[in-house]
Length: 302
Image (cartoon, rainbow, N blue to C red; front, side, top):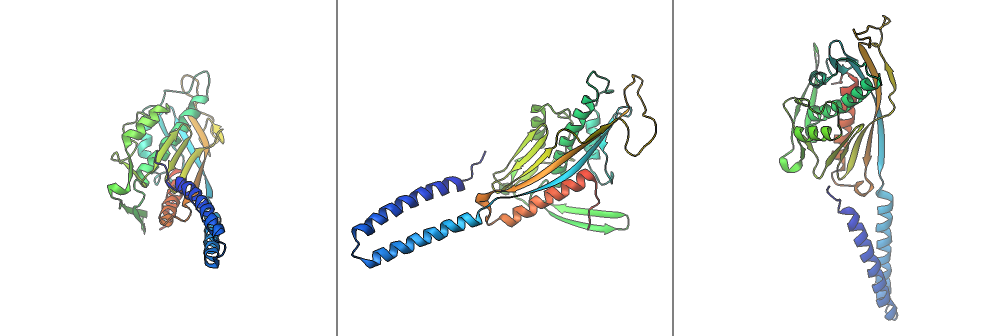
């Protein structure tokens, strides 16, 4: 993990400044007959105080949060798992959903029913977020254009980062990390279309936990946290009043679970005035707003 040199720089600089002030104060004390030395020391102390005050007032962290509803439907009869969104065609997670469906059990008829369905649904939300990052946010500096057409909306994008401007996370690395946390879908053939790599800002890392995905850069962190317990679970499709269909073994055909996903963006205090801060703010904003569209299915506005 890359260590930000800002923290040791402040500590070393602060200690060195204190030593300098003590030494220069002693020099001025010994030479009290010189007004100029005293005035110079006073100006130096004043400049140090102003600089310290600017650090105190300008270097503050900022935190913002966005809540997203992730609705997951499992159809054990059709052996399918998917997001239930307001616009299913827009949610390109249908590709990873087809791959994930191959790993579903035949039913949820175990002793801990419906715990199996809830666990599978949570694992699928984690997979969906990763799928979104690899497909929609594969490069932190990409350009994107949106167009309104007669049949809906269309988007184009282009990656801009050079290899030296990336911390590259491969599709294979992510699948390995999913296996490390025993995610039910760690062995999917491909998480992204075309096995894309993820280009994060330089000196970045990504942490994947059973209910959390965190991107950490030198300037900010973006945290996707699946809130537990789940918001809702039922054994029928939403919006239907028909009797609950059952499988031959007596277990429900459907599982419908809603999870709350809290996306928190934090900009670190020591980099609050970084010369690249606006570029990072733009990237973080795109990641958060795009995740909402991807998971909830809202149609993007050109």
